[in-house]
Length: 139
Image (cartoon, rainbow, N blue to C red):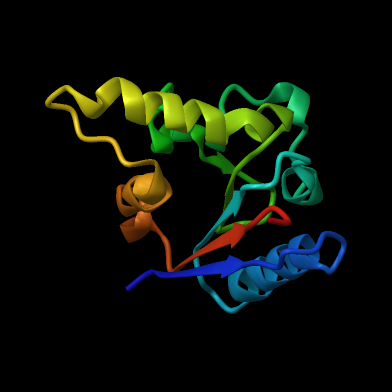
């Protein structure tokens, strides 16, 4: 059964990204399959695991805004059994876009709830991993 762990703190610069990456590597070294979710617009977890942000085709932003299926945003890293859903600067405005999407779908048959959006997307891939680690932004 997959465990989802969010590394959070309201303050920046306290080691959230370092903790997420090192925890992920430690779990991989113990034979676990891990997916790291970079939710910080700075994208430091993305670069921290060796992914060049200039070369990615999709990120958590596209997943959250329904522009890409979650499975298509997952990138395998050089570390065996460690994958990442990357982030970059466009993630900074995602909250406003999610509010707009929620408004858009309010009077339709399509269900959209920005509060549980990430949970719904992770449910689609959680059976592929032992752990999903979420590197949260400072907020």
